[in-house]
Amino acid sequence: MSAREMEAPDASEVMKSIFRTTLHEIGTPINGIVSASRLLEQELGKGNHEFIQELIQMIGTSANYLQEIFERVRLAAQQENLHRFQLDEIVFDFSKLLDGILRSMAALFMEKQISVVKRMSDDFPHTVFSDRTYLTQIVYNLLTNALKYSPKSTRVTITCFLRDGEKMCMEIADQGIGIPARELPYIFKEYHQIVAGAPSKFGGMGLGLSIVKNLTEVMGGSIEVMSEVGVGSVFTIVLPLKK
Image (tube, rainbow, N blue to C red):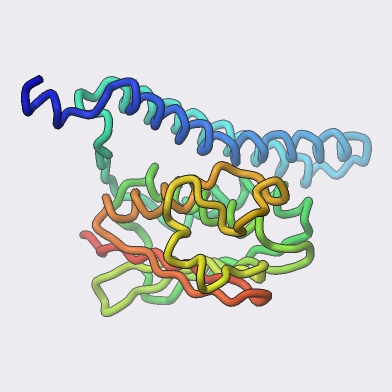
C-alpha cells in the first residue's frame, strides 16, 4: 500500500460520517415541521388566521432548511476529499437569518413554554460575510441543546455583539440543568452525552456540540462555554469579522 493510500480516508467511513451527521442535522427541522403541523391542526377550527399564517411560515422555513442540508450533503458527496469542510462565504443579513431560524423552531419552544429573546448590540453589523449554511447549523445545534436541556417555562437568550472591533460574537444562554465541571472537557467529543448515564432521558446522538466546534473552527473561530449545574449554560461563538 502506498503512502498516499495510507493517508487517504476510507471512503466508506467518510460516507458513514456524512450519513450520521445528516441524520442529526435533519432532526430539528423535521421536529419543527411536526410540532407546527400539530399546532396548525389545533388552530384550524379557531379562526386565528394570524397565528395560522405564522405556523405555515414555520413549516416553510423548516422545509427550506431541510433543502439546504440536502444540497450541502449532495455537494459534499461529490467532493474528492469528502472529509474536508468547504466554505461558501457570502454577504447576508445575520439578524434576518436568526429570525428565520427562530421562526422555524418557534413551535418547539412553544410546546415547552420557553421564551426566546434576541438581542443585537448597536455596533453589530447589519450584514456579515460568512458561510450562511454553516452558521445556520451552528445556531440550530446550540438552540436545540438549549431546548433539550431546559425545563418548561424558562428563557433562552441570544445576544450578538462585537469583541475588540474585529470579532463577531454570538452568545446563547439558557436556564437549563447546567453541565458538571467534570464534563466540560468532553462535551465537544462525538457521541458524548452532556448528562452522563442519562441518554434515554434527553435523547440525541451526542453529535451537536461536536458539529458546532468543527464548523466554528473551520470558519476560523472558537467556542467558549460557561456552565453551572442547576443554573444554566452559556455558549459563545467567536468568529473573525470579515469585510
